[in-house]
Image (cartoon, rainbow, N blue to C red; front, side, top):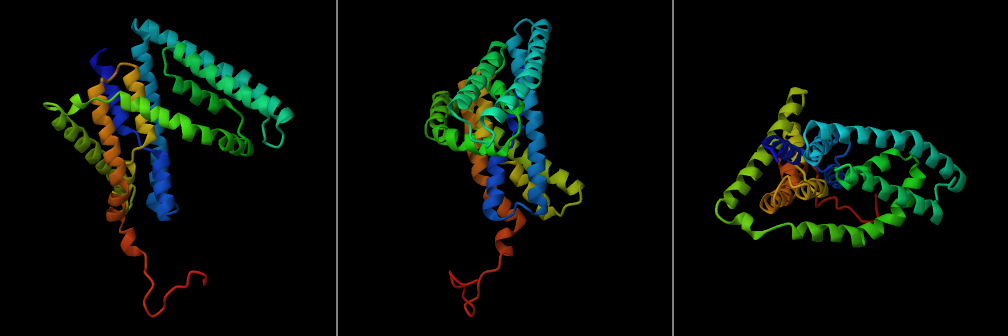
Length: 293
C-alpha cells in the first residue's frame, strides 16, 4: 500500500461527523431549530457524503491490486451495479410493494426478498473489492421511498439489530484493538491525532460559520457539534482495518479519539453557545407545578 491511499483514508476518517449523534444532541437540548443547529446538521450531511465517497474510492484503489486497470474494472462494475439497482431492481420492487404491501406493512415474503436483495448487493460490492457496507447503502438508496414501509421495517429489524448485530459489531471492533498502541510513542501519537482532530474540526467549522455571518458563539458551537463522533466513525475505521489501510495500533488510537471527541461534544457545545445560561429557571416566588401549565 502506498502513501496516498493511507493519507486519503486518514483524511476521510478525521473528517467524518456522526450525523445521528449530532441530531440526538440537538434534539435533547431543544436546539434543532436554532440557526447553528440547522447549519451543523446541513454541514454534517454534506461532509459525510464527500467523506464516504472518498472512503469508497480509497478502498477501491487498494482493492484493485493492479493499478489503474484494476480500478477501472471496479469502476465499471460499480456503474453496472448502480444501473441494475436503479433501472431494474427499483421498478421491480416498486411494483411488488404496491401489489403485496400497499399499506406499507410487508409480509414475510416481501421481508425475505428485501433481506435477500440486501445481502446479494453487499456480496456484489465485496466481490468488486469494495466493502459490503457500500452494497447495503446502495440497495437502500435504490429502494422506492415509502415512509410507512420504512417505519415498518425499522420496527421489525431495529430490535434485532440493536440487541444482536450492534453488540456483535462492537465486539469485533474490540478484537481489532491492541494495548501496544500505547507503548513507546503511541501515547504521543494518540494525543497528536486527538489534538489535530479536535482543533481542526472546531476551528474549521467555526471559521466557515463565521464567514457565513454567524456570531462567534454560534460559530464555535457549530464547530463543537461538527466534532461529534459515534458509530459512523467506528464503521469507517473498521472498513480501513479490514482493507489493510490501517493496523491495530492506529485503529486503537482512532477508536479512543472517537470516544473522547464524542464525549466532549455536548459540554463544548453548551460552553460555546451558552445555552445553559440562556434557559430561565423558575423563581422561588412562582414555582412551577408539574401538572399545571
